[in-house]
Amino acid sequence: MDAFVSRKRRRSPPLPTNEEAVAIPESTEETSEESTDFKLAILSSLHPDVDQGSLLETLLLSDGFVETASQYLSERKYASPRKKQAIGTGYQASISSFGIKSGGDGTPRRIRPLTRKGQTLHLYTPEDIEAHTPCSIIHNFLPSEHADALLRELMEESPTFFRAKFKLFDRVVQSPHTFAMYVDSESEQELHKTEYVYDGHYFKDVRRTLPEMLKASTKVEAAVNAEVKRRIRDFYPGGKKLPFQSPHDWKPNASFVNAYDGASESVGWHSDMLNYIGPRAIIGSLSLGVAREFRVRKVVAREDRNMDPKTPDKKSDDQRADEEGQIAIHLPHNSLLVMHAEMQEEWKHSIAPAKAIDPHPIAGNMRINVTYRCYKDDLNAKLIPKCRCDGMSTVLRCLQKKKETRGRYIWMCYTNYQPDKEGCSFFQYADFDDDGNPPWSKDYKKPTKLEDLPD
Ligand SMILES: O=C(O)CCC(=O)C(=O)O
Ligand SMILES: [Fe+2]
Image 1 (spheres, rainbow, N blue to C red):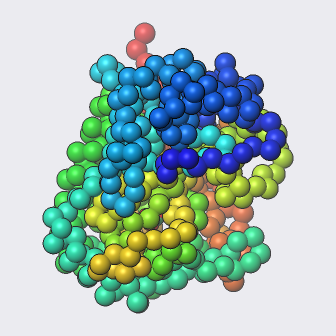
Image 2 (tube, helix red, strand yellow):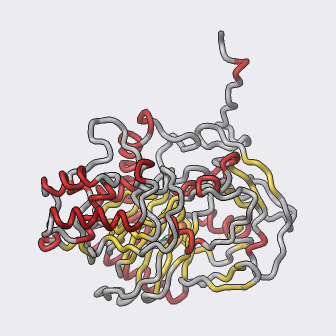
Image 3 (cartoon, protein in one colour):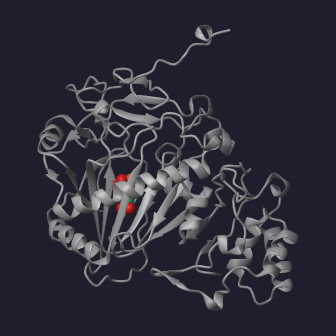
């Protein structure tokens, strides 16, 4: 099997499919694993020199139609596995090099996830990543001396990074990687230490952005803004920004730096806290040192999984990822990943533990990641709703699991996540205008009511 598709055999019949989660259309919904194997056998006999991974990938991209897949394979626009070219540390016959594009006629392209149950689809090229995930990537982002200087600066800091403790059900667990938080000004530093709540507590160790980080930040800002504009133009309906997305340029003023020391260090499935960065947030994520896999998967509502919405969801994120399929984006040294506006609300991400890693000449076994973020003045910790736990600020979440409330934002108590504290049950729907401004913002535009519209 090719390096970029791994596949587990299903033991039970396939789950009913849904258009967001899988690529195989309704017409092939009832087909069993055996019939996929049968289709692969036909394709294999027609194209004996193409490896199984490429056959399967082409079959998926052809919506399960053998004839279409065979036609693409006959045209042979893809890189033959025997002539694979190295991209970073991995290998890939690019999906787009198969000559199949998500749009291509000037109309906005839809993100079309290709994941299937039990699969990890590995993506390496910028074209594949932006076509099938809510992210875009720029390889070799900084001049190489600058990337190395930034890596050295952060390697020096990393022994003093912090390992978070949090509550998982009734157990206290330690985060499987270390991190530190940096802000760009002294006033923000003071405010963060005393006002901003993370995972139910205040961080006392908020640092000032270091010189190389600051230098990189200006370049990240320009690149992210250009990528966001391109994303809106080429991918979003009508070439318009998403509802709740800010119309203004993105300006980073804070960052989390994560350190993964060795193959087993990781971060579990999550989406990032929106409290201070607002709805439809953008994040610029710079990877340095050892190349690792960044995994993404789309959140699927329970009804779409044919689950009774009232039944508690007992499956872990890892089980879900395995069931629904996931995409692995390979992040080599000096790559900038832009997480676009649809990412945090609709997708989850993780850094998976690796089986093996290629040591980096400067970083050894370490991967360093800087996530540049834009903390919004109007979502300052003093302004957002507080819960009943000692005046702690609440967390902003976007509901995803049930269809009837899907996409609604809520403010809720976050203290429950802290090892030694029980939270309150505070919960309140959160209101934002089309540009993502909260009602207390001077820029907030009240939505026009139907009866107020001119005849
Ligand atoms: O290390 C990464 O690439 C991702 C880190 C991350 O998800 C986070 O800081 O929220
Ligand atoms: Fe994250």
